[in-house]
Length: 177
Image (cartoon, rainbow, N blue to C red):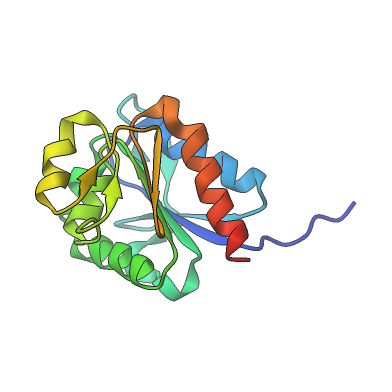
């Protein structure tokens, strides 16, 4: 049986010290759903390592991608978002995906990128408790729930919340089909 081509193209940001499950669970779930997943790092073809040393090789560099070419963005947690938010190109890409009304999903420390891109102001969100105050100070309203959907923003707290987060992301993608 011939497999139909992917209907959605999703970027997943990569940087060192990402949380293993928070990158790989979304990648595998999206691929299972028939999406094309593009790993985007500061540089193309570089292996970024997780908190536990697990490799994630970037397909493209952030300078090679444009928001118009994607249907959504996943920002994994761990400590990688602290590095990502220092890269103006990654911040702009996040802001551009959001401004285009496409899904921007993050978990754990991922909302640091959303704060840096100034897209949580006036929005409801959730995250790991360690950065709750940072995101509140960026103008967001914290909700303690496994997943919070506010328009095109989808946020979750920690790895046990990944199934709820990905269900919300896939529902958003299906609704926009």
